Image (cartoon, helix red, strand yellow):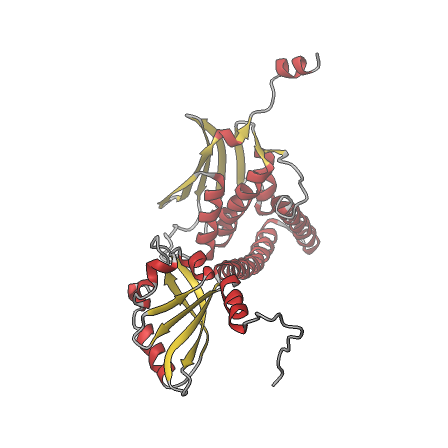
Length: 346
């Protein structure tokens, strides 16, 4: 086993002083306890993570750091330590002084006296909050990727079916599918441009053309109408709104009005009491069924509505789905009037 050698030690050098400095300077919580579970030592890292000063905890049971639903962990840990076993990288949750919880990775080792008897345990706790956040983000990213891939296959099927029933010849079918796939690509590019960092500032986006672009791949004759007030929305908000409209359109193509030839979709933009209101109304499709599960699409919708600081309400009528999206018009700007444009030129 390799050893660290220190040369030219000062005359007053004491290895215990260096060891104490290493322990006190660690960002990890380093705590010792006896076999009854009482805290015997407490370093600066423990104070930073848990919020207790040493004099507040030394001599008290380690259980003050353990949430009630995890109290059974301590007897199992002490049993392993008493048997001379080491606990490596045990991920758990502990409680701070203010009552909040912190995820930790614990490494626990037996402490022996000069005769080799086990008299306690040393516990090193590393805050893994950032790791948990990164794992959650990765999980959401993978979930969104799976959701998007599944939706793309469904969209391709819907576009092929839609094109086949509206075209007379195979050549027309191929041409129409290509056109709709190109429109779908443009909608995706518009939707994700700001997320990829291509927009350095919050550039205004015309709201009605944005909705029309997203819905264009699903259009079959006059089955879709988009009307209402002309307005602009900041590009940072446009990405969230575009994704939300895309989710509604995807579901309409898979299960709703856009899944059948006689189905119709009407989208109208209005202003009401300081709010932008987008009314989504499907008719002529299969009778909608309110979903009984909360899937990734629902999670995504909640996140998008939160980003818009708005709300969405649905009515599952026999005639078809009706949805109303609302968000504050402080996020939206009206195009300048002719007089305002003239003034700006002066």
